[in-house]
Length: 575
Image (tube, one colour):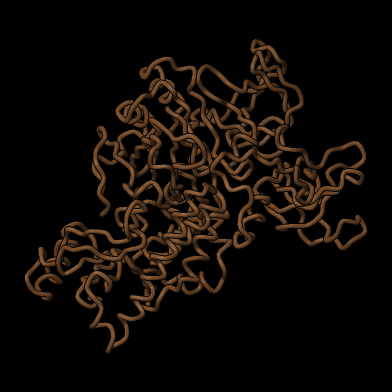
């Protein structure tokens, strides 16, 4: 074990291909992984005083901060002194100081409790909450009030066989104490906080449909639980559904419809080629398995077509940490991004799709095929829109208007660039909270390489991935050099066409100023700081709020099986 500021972080046994120790150039990765492993506590005291006192230092005689830490808040442990019951924390939810020192216990009363003792009410949304009774038996007297959905309670006593829980309320509306059922047939009514809150285990809550023995049973259970699933998506940003009875994309589409209703998209409106695997279910982005797909929200570059929700379903998954689809907390990203970057991006971003004058093979690092050179054949040409530049510009703009889009058209040498306008920061369409909209670093020449470095450090540190990243470093450096030479009046014209490519995508700020490689790296770094992870297995699907949570794909061995499908929706409606 390695001791990290009060947290015991176990080492995992490396695989045969794993790197025993990361190179020193990845030293910046260690504080991030250590931070994710620290325990989380629930504030259970301070009801009568509007929260508990927070002090600047470890000593109880140090200066007290003006704000109190609210009852029901969740905090991450940074340091803990067991003898004096003093905790240095980082606030995750609730109100109060972002960090400081608190006492976990005062005389004979707990002020904070580790989250395994905390539960959150997720069921009963359609009935105003869950039923509370005076006694453990389900035949005992019912209290006049229900425990409202969203309330946080502390466990006092539990009967795991009868699925009954005696609680004391920490936050929310309803009786102060009583007995409730944690689960009714096929539906969770309360779940442990450690399994619920995305900030706790750096994952998403899992909704268990493993008892469903057939597709019909899984669909029926999903329909009965749709309110709880929708509530989890609204409050946490996403939910995992474990349904082994679902064997393929068709089964997934049927089950998802029970949750999302008629809001599932029948066609994919984006520019990336996808194939229909079943009705309303599509293949995921086809990028070489060894290549990373940087973080983004789906169709962030086309805000008029951006879906409200996205779902992923796993039919087959490779072993190990490769081929995963981690989610990204876009609210936390906005709070964590440097203020100078946020200020420059606030006006918006222009993302472009670039089209060559004729089909050919070009140097494009983000499209690197590790099994061959960094040159990618492109079979399209802007001349299909018109024989002259002027005609092509008019036809591209007209075609976009027919699709309800507004685009700008300009040129990079002989390449046509079609720009979409996207906000970098926007309010959530339901809650109104400000969110980072999920700018895709793949629209920058340095974005894919940045993600490759984090993939090696965090997600897939094998020698195979180190070699792929090294190849990507070389091809990206060559691309940057060629772009520099192309900008020089006397030299640019001497470059052959396959080296003068601006790439298939690019982006600039709304005012036309450049997005630097340092900007792209800092965005990718923030994405990887606020990752929510899970391990794919057959029958598991994830339902994500596409405004609140982004996603990316980790590289994997191309010789291993991976079948993951996706579906999109706009709004959750009752089926």
